[in-house]
Amino acid sequence: MDTDLPLTRPGVDPYSASHKPTLPPPHYDLRRERGLVIERNCVIPLRDGTEIFADLYRPEGASAAPLLLAWGPYGKHALTNQVFWPRSGVDPAWLSDLTAFEAPDPVFWAQHGVGVAVVDPRGAWLSGGDFHHNGRQEAEDCADAIEWLAGRPWCNGRIGMTGVSYLACIQYLVAPLRPPALAALNPWEGFSDWYREFAYHGGILETNFLPRASDNIRFSLNRTEDTWANALAHPLMDGFWRSKELDLEGIVQPAYVVASWSDQGLHLRGTIEAWRRMASKDKWLEVHGQKKWAHYYRPESRERQRAFFEHYLFDRPTALAAWPPVRIEVREQHGAAQERAETAFPLESATLTSFHLTTDGQLARAAPTEGVVRYDACTGQATFDYRFDQDTEITGHASLRLWVEAEGASDMDLFVALQKLDNAGQPVGFTFYAFFENGPVALGWLRASHRALDQERSRPDRPWHSHDVEQVLQPGERVPVEIEIWPSSTLFRAGESLRLVVAGHDIYPKEEGAMLPFALHEQTRNAGTHVLHMGGEQDSLLRLPIVARE
Image 1 (cartoon, rainbow, N blue to C red):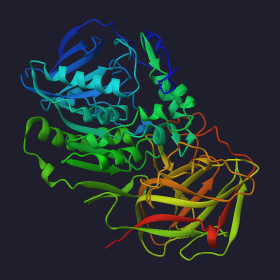
Image 2 (image 1 turned 45 degrees about the vertical axis):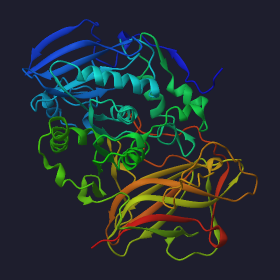
Image 3 (image 1 turned 60 degrees about the vertical axis):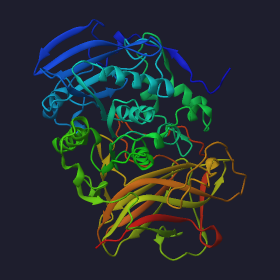
């Protein structure tokens, strides 16, 4: 038996999904409304003969319209402008009730001469075959769909792709196959490393979003991958995870890539990495600090999407020539940020600066005397503060080197957060995922037994762990660990402080009874006491990208 093959399970009756609108039968349906010609349940034949279903929306009377493809497993029938919960910040007036989850709005795009195709992938809902959660099969299926859509007699032969999360990730997967009709990409927040960003943060299993995502892809007439079971079966980097790897360097299409500082623990890291590694001659990166769904549908965001797609789907002159390669928001707190143009990311104006951890809970510029800090491995934490005497901007990747020892255990799971404190020493909240406003500046994680580094890929500001071997700790053993802290951008005013938190558990507020669509790690190896060593030859230090300000 090939242990790298994904585990699958029988699909759940698609008509039993009570959390979705009623699933209509798979009959072809043609109607005209709101300036649209709508074709439901169009059959797309794939190269192996499997047939999948798509809903097509095109401007009425159009004879040469390009198409935007929305490809995802959440059901093309799930059309409602109430799917985005009030705390998401999405104004229902921004989108029509023909908008699929995390997908472009057909009514908006038809007003600009662009059609929208929403596809149920192989094995999803009523589409034929077994569901493959990414991998080569889904990439080829998507490429087949792109060419079929481009061949519609009313299409101008150009297909663009846009959407959030899954609808972004599929773009990284299909673009390297270079289907001729695929003219432009707009991945809006999608992870690109299955192991490090989706399943195992620093080698620590993610136990909240991952099983929920697995549940969302179980509705099928046939079999589906069991993503949660696969994650449990593959705790180390192996052939299974490599089968999900992406050829990001093979992407050559024009790309407008959007990430958010708020998506710590899911899409942030991989979206920036995808942009960085793309070979596209024309590519732009935008990193904001807002709630992701709201940002996608905001009128000003859609105007940028429109300019991008009009340029590449119609050859129309737009403002793209004046776009900076990188645009970022520098945050001060939730709802307060300044947008700035940049030429690159990481920023050329940022200098990686070291701050030493001290036994009295400070971050110091000078090396401290030797000492230790202890905390309960399961419930405790240690904090280290630095108060700024002048306005200071931190933008980019950060990292933390700790010298650690586990008392009473052979492993330790380390959780790291950067926080901002105001002049009075009170926490300042930041946008967190799609709902929350009380999150940290940035997060990092590492299981100590996963401390081995890939030396070729590691940088001082970004350690890269191989995750293919475990090195457990011996009693009394002290080891250095390098912890990647996901990128962020924050302005600290004079008198405000940066706080580093190190703990054996997740470090952000939890709301009882609330939907929590973010990463949690509830199966740690922690026991006993964590010991942090500092000073001398076992100096623990935080590296921060300090930006030179005019």
